[in-house]
Image (cartoon, rainbow, N blue to C red):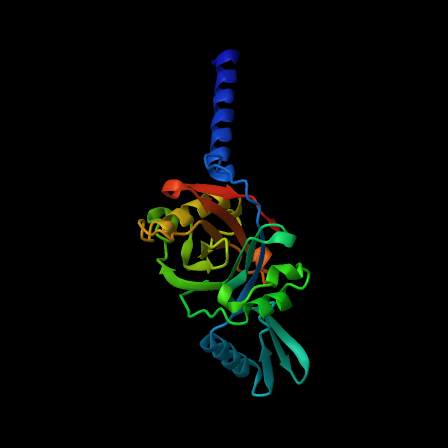
Length: 278
């Protein structure tokens, strides 16, 4: 029978292992912390494939007859099936999150240094225009300070949008994490304090267990994305952001996705940014 001393040592060792695992996998405590504190606004856009919508409509007509009406509001993802004005069935169809848009703002409202507006697809790279984005953001985020959106189309660009493999470049680890692809883009701020930010949007099916490990997962995703860029480029990204959609069932971007941001030091070293969200 083990002595009390041996039991105490075993309990201490187990506690230490748990603490180390928590620090490594949840807090991600090895990464340095940046002193910069930007703000971010984020919203997800949802869509449903026309073929899937048509299949649902056909199935409901076959079930209830030709007078049935089927609607799928994208903000809820719940299909409402009505017959002669009466609700006869509801179905949770979960439209996909097709893209994420928003803005990162660096500096106080009275002296904003950099802005990184963005819209990045969650599925595949798509042509993205920088036209009239400030007006769109201002209309979407009415509670934000108006100074955040005081920039012109020529002040920034978004380009080099690239598809990520299903495992996001993490191999067997990506498969184990239920990652299912995504994209990243480079956003260039062209004013006096010019800089580039790499923004990635990744999708996973790991809910509900994944969220506590977002810090560590996002760092791996970001490092894999940076590894795809030309390492000798002088205009490489100074910042990076990882948007991980781990709860696609929620319509609200802040509930369906989490965000991690980084400044990039010499040699590509990441420094985690603690930022605020309006």
